[in-house]
Length: 222
Image (tube, rainbow, N blue to C red; front, side, top):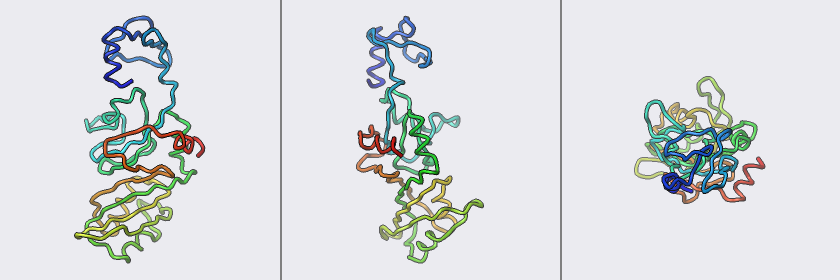
C-alpha cells in the first residue's frame, strides 16, 4: 500500500508492532520487530523490488543529506519499501536511475566487471564542429586517470547549441562534465537515457515505475 494508505491503517489501529498498536512515525527494526497489519504478519522487507526513476535536476542521489538538499526519497513517498540507488547522478544531472533493495543486483549493476553501457544526451553551449567531437572520442586523461574509450556522436546543432550522444562503459565522478570542461565546452543539460538494455522511455521527470518481469530477469542475469 502507499504511505498515505498505511497511515490510515495505523490511525484505525489495524497495525501493531510486537503486539502493541503502532503510531505514525514509529521506527522499527525489520530484522527483529514483528509487524502485523489486520492480524497478518507483514514481511515487506523480504520482497525484492526493482525501480526505474527519472531523476530531475536539483536532487542529490542519496537517501538523506546533511545540507538539507532535496533527496531521492522525496520522489518515492508512495513506495512502501526502502530502496537504494545503484550508482549516481550528480545534482545537476537528470535521467535514468535504478534503485533496489536487492543487494546482489545492486552489486552487479555497480561492479566495473560488467561494463554496462550507459548512454547520455548532453546539450552544450555552442555549435560543436566534428573536429571537437573527434577530440572527445580520443584517449583522454582526467584527474590523473586514463579514461576508457568513449563514443560521442552528433544528435543535432541548432540555435547556438549542440546535442551530443555519449556512450560510456564506466562511470567516473562527473566524467562527462570534466571531459567537456577540458576542451572548453559548457554543459547546459545532461540526461542519462539508458543503462545496459534498460531505457528510460517515456517516463517523465520525477516519475518512477517498477521494472517489468523481463527487465528484472535481465538485471538478475548480469
